[in-house]
Length: 234
Image (cartoon, rainbow, N blue to C red; front, side, top):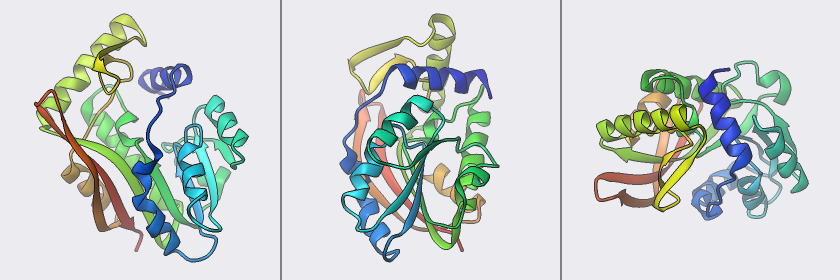
């Protein structure tokens, strides 16, 4: 495992961000359409708050959560979920979790799959989508929630600034007015909508729909779209 990933895990073990779980409400109807008691795996489930939110809204949902942090897995299990230690970057993950799921969920994970460069980071995202797709049955769905940004050059600059701060100062975080606007930990590698759609296509998935969950900007420079991607495994 890369030192960049080690630093990410260390950061999230120390600092658990809190988000509005309604950001995944676009998934509710998609999961209901899968029939009674759909089998779902949440890759990067964190403390289980998203799965708990969905279990309360989708009758009969049968979820499994996976996260690389044992502490997060313990927290998810305390919520009454079936959570296990594992990584979306592990090509052998199915041996520990099984496969043939009706849907795989990937919630705000892709931008954290960082490598030493932007290119390596994108390769990690491609590998992760491939692992997720392999866990889903033919005809099943891959549901992704991801904050996307443009311009691409701005996101490349952000990646290198945050990487430099982390390597010089450790997992320190300097907020610039609000938690979402900061330098330092965690290192992130954001993508735009077209880049993620291309990665889904590259994994052989059929893009069914995109759902704009929210929009905004960073300091009036970078445009943000938090997007729900709905893809089907042929």
